[in-house]
Length: 471
Image 1 (cartoon, rainbow, N blue to C red):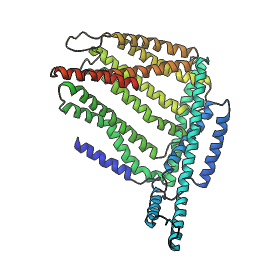
Image 2 (spheres, helix red, strand yellow):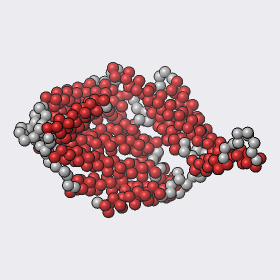
Image 3 (tube, rainbow, N blue to C red):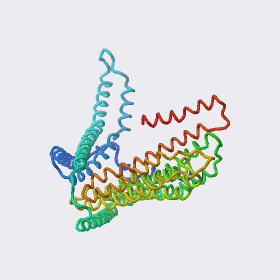
């Protein structure tokens, strides 16, 4: 374990220390060249004109928003430009001391102070321009997000084309193929350009090192943490559940670090175009959904014990299966939505593209609702919940899982999505709350406590419930 962590640390150090195109720039270079400044001004003016319109297409908003996000990230990076030179000039000014109260100082000192102040102002100017550009782009992105939210809210009660129309289904299939084709064309063009100008070969060592680290953390990091958890002596009694829960959180963090490393490696290659970059930016959210779903399924439906809910082994297996499948379908929809966000599609095509995901999620959610409704297995040696809450949650899950795809099939796709997706996340949140309650219950149960200690630890579930309520 220590050897693996050491190798991982060295590889990450190599990855971050390798030079790239971004680090090769001079520290005193202005953040935006003249031609780029003109291009940004043109883009910002188009975005401002679009934001001022009362009615506009979501396609135009999504396209401009994607470009604004790129500029916002660039401006945010440039807000720290010339930091080293500014610190040096400030140190030089401090070395000259304060200006005398009478305002009289040697002419050579006054001239040097004025030159340093002018130099500092020149160095600070690019940072101020970058901060202004960041505020401008961030404000426009916020306006676009508000416009999209308002449009989606208005569409809740509007009936659109039926997604089951064969013509719309063919259009959705063509749109998916077009997305894949465009990403492939962008990829080939960017790789060819990177080879010709030498940028790809310059950033390849750092990207390769990050990719190795990411794949290692994703592939074998979680297994090593699991073996470490099984070998680690866990204390009995009150703190056993808390220690196991803390170790399970480590099983989330390791693959998440690997996922971010892989995403950073692919992004640093600079081989993705507009559509590919949109999909790549959505990979962390999609991957985190899968990882969290996997973790939550094994906490609520454990493999080796009945757990707090007291399900039998067959019910727990089904719960893990359906929860994991829900996470994978949601992750796939996140990637598809990211790629389709800047594509111009008709309302029927968009509905036909959304409905298969809703139908699949509804089917899996319905099966999960039946699992949740299952009564606990009788066990006098363990403390399990009575089963009233699971019956209510399971019945509500089944109703939503059936109603949402039907509503969407009738043409109310936005309403069906707004009904089903939040319900899935709400059930996941209930699982987290139950997990916290289980930990609180385990902290209060110990046969070695005195009467005073039992009363003290009995307040732990109350405190946890209060924190969850305030959150």
